[in-house]
Image (cartoon, rainbow, N blue to C red; front, side, top):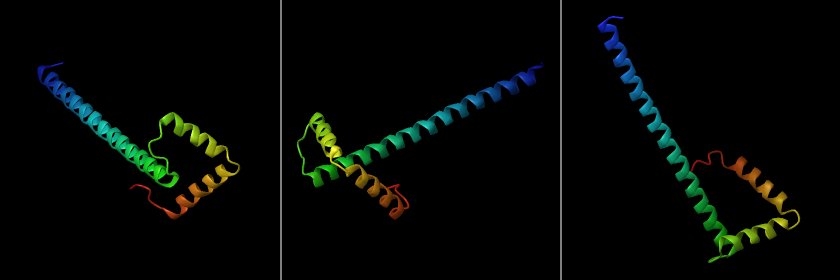
Amino acid sequence: MNERDSQRLAKIDEKMEQMKAQRQDILARDRKRQRQERTRRLIQIGAMTEKYFDIKDIQPNDYEIFLKVFLAIQNVDGYIAHAKMQAKTTTPNNTE
C-alpha cells in the first residue's frame, strides 16, 4: 500500500471515530430525554395520587401497602383495565 492510500485510510478511520462519537452523543441525548419523560410522568402520577386519594406525607412502604390493599378490592383491576382502554381511545397522542 502506498503512502497516499495509507493517508486516505487514516482519514477514513478518523471520520469513523468522529461518527461513532456523534452516534453515542445522539443515543445519550435520547436516553436522557426518555429518563426526563419518565420522571415527569412519575411525578404527575404521584401528584394525582396524592390529590385524589388524599394521602399526603405517606412513606413509600406505607404507600405500597395501600396500593396492595386497594388493588385487592374485588373488580378494581377490571376498572383499571377499562380506564386504560378508555384513555388509549380518547387520547391519540400521549406525548405530553
